[in-house]
Amino acid sequence: MSENIFITEARIEGDDDGPLAGKTVAVKDNISTEGVRTTCGSRMLEDYVPPYDATVVSRLKDAGATIVGKANMDEFGMGTTTETSHFGETDNPAAPGHVPGGSSGGSAAAVAAGEADLALGSDTGGSVRCPAAFCGVVGIKPTYGLVSRYGLVAYGNSLEQIGPFGETVEDAAGLLDVIAGSDERDATTRPPQLEGERYADAATGDVDGLQIGVPTELLEGADEGVVETFWDALGALEDRGAEYHEVSLPSVEHAVEAYYVIAMSEASSNLARFDGVRYGHSGGYDGNWNEAFAKAREEGFGDEVKRRILLGTYALSAGYHDKYYKKAQDARAWVKQDFDEALSEADVLASPTMPVPPFELGESLDDPLQLYLADANTVPVNLADLPAISVPAGETDGLPVGLQLVGPAFGEEQLIRAASALA
Ligand code: GLN
Image (cartoon, rainbow, N blue to C red; front, side, top):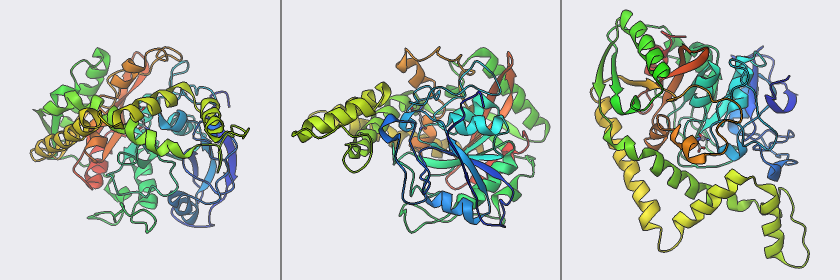
């Protein structure tokens, strides 16, 4: 396996029968698996073996799936390329020499390489949709609250959802059927709102009469070849009876800033638990607890994680809280409002998933700000708690391009129906 897709290869057999019997699934390594180490791509958790399963993992087992490994990822989900992993980079099976996207890069690569039929990732600001787009597979970011986060190691807990990958929309929707629904261990969850029986049944490809809104702001500044591929895919939907019109989301101009303030603030709090005492890399106690904690965190975390903990701590500190965190929350409310308005005149919104094609390996590591800006089209959706799907739209210069569809809260069925016209 030259691509470095898995951090840990492990076979976890599920029940004998069920809707996923005979299917193999790769699980992102920030989703807890009882008895199988769960590293979050970090040295901090290099030897951490959870004593329990995440709810989604129990549901996979009950559904008869076989888990084939824990997939590589950016450290604690912080990244867009899977290059911040302590366990090395993953190559993109659909575009060798390029990044698979991130942070769930190993999961998407597993499906693209045929190492697994399906995969689970997590999406805090695009981490399912970006690697789906870069690897030429399908990825779904569910509405906030549709899928249990119990057993998902938290990064930005108010933003993130576990989401499925598949080669086709129907495959990904079938996995969503298994993981979706309320869980008494996650009070933010609620049941699916389905018109039919299953999400997978919605993958009919019927887009006749579908009203598509195209937010002009999400095309501005995007790579030319990406935009061309996007319009070609939209044309294919039009040929099948869909109609589109332009819409405006003025607030998205501030979405990347707001997202990174909120995500880093939540990260600084969520990652405070890693002190090397209860679990994780130990700093070794030498008579001074402060020094032991500092050493554990200095050695256990990589640069990107440290950068975010520092910035998040700063944004939340007395005197700066109102200036950064509160402002970001105001921007979040504005983004939500804009989406509500745009979706009152359209069934779904369409844009390129990523404004750029996959970077070459190593190309983007030195410029974190540039990398944050690559999330421009995905993070607004997390700020608004909405569902979205990334579906292959075609290629530019031989590199995969993804089309993103965004729908109203709990409107996954609609997204699945529309996206299944393309894959
Ligand atoms: N690239 C974004 C970030 O680094 C998204 C990550 C994610 O969705 N986990 O925060």
